[in-house]
Image 1 (cartoon, one colour):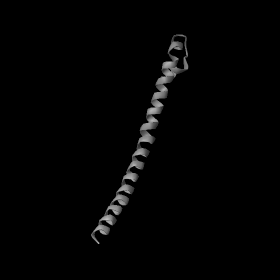
Image 2 (cartoon, helix red, strand yellow):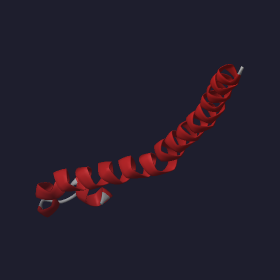
Image 3 (tube, helix red, strand yellow):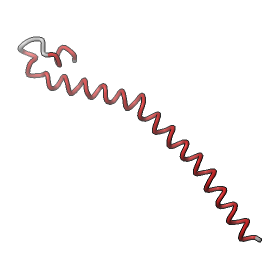
Image 4 (cartoon, rainbow, N blue to C red):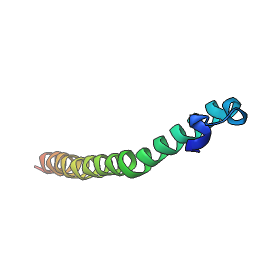
Length: 68
C-alpha cells in the first residue's frame, strides 16, 4: 500500500487516498489490538476484583448487623 499511498506514477495518483486510508486503518487496528484491548481488559479485571472485595465485605457486614 505504501507505493499506492505515495503515488509514484500518474496511474496511482487517483488511488492515493485509498492507500492512505488502508494504511491508517491497518495502523489503527494494530494499535487497538495490541495496546488498547489488553489495557481495557486489565482495568476491567481490576475493577471486578475490587468490586468483589468491597461488595462482599458490605454484604457480610450488613448481614452481621441484622443478626445481632
